[in-house]
Length: 103
View 1 (cartoon, rainbow, N blue to C red):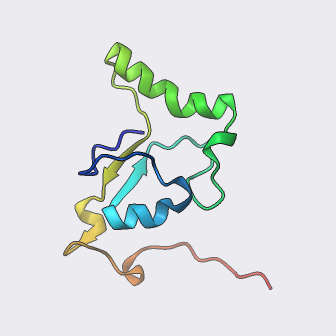
View 2: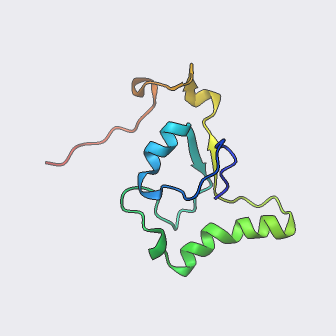
């Protein structure tokens, strides 16, 4: 995953705590493949299968080797629309889907 959006060198990506990492650095992942579980508490990078690893890595390798404009996962800064005075907009202003709680 390309992490140019972060102004420091990373030794590793904190996959299992990515939500806190993303909030701290005000970044998000774009172009994450549907076939790969999203980063979070249950994410286990070392347990990904070959198809999942191919989905994550092949587009970036193609981009690097062939210079193509391939879509690949990368970390990008929040857009101006997602920020308000340097802070995430309040949840009340976001359009969230309505769901029912199961009891």
